[in-house]
Length: 175
Image (tube, rainbow, N blue to C red):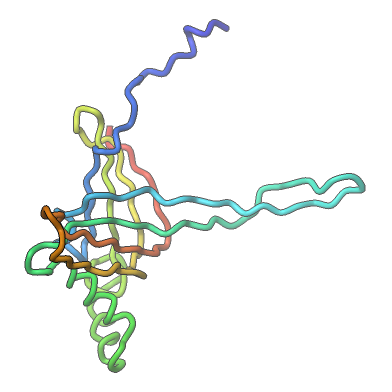
């Protein structure tokens, strides 16, 4: 077999700049997302003992890593408040009615209840959509602090990081 016949059909590298992101429940965050990453995926390993060595075999459960986005906070903090309000409703810091209001709001994945679905769209080098990464039943678990500092010599607009857990993620080619 010749090395020449083993060439890929697309020789372009994937750019980290080419993506779009959206969560149904937080439309104010979507426009301002600056960074997102496809989470890790881990398959457990079992071992079979032998008289000599333990033989590894594939496990039967997948562990999905956390999903994290970084976004610029808008001037009125409306996008920050979308995730803050979602988290406080889930965490019910005052009373159970906060959770009841969000749990009664809609079906899973609708963007109106406890969970929401999200999509990370990967773009080609020509900025055309090529792949969707769908996150099912996503919910926030961490929202970073907002740091203000009057000592700065230039304006570095405030960014926030939100971390999510989800049921699973799947891929859909668009081309």
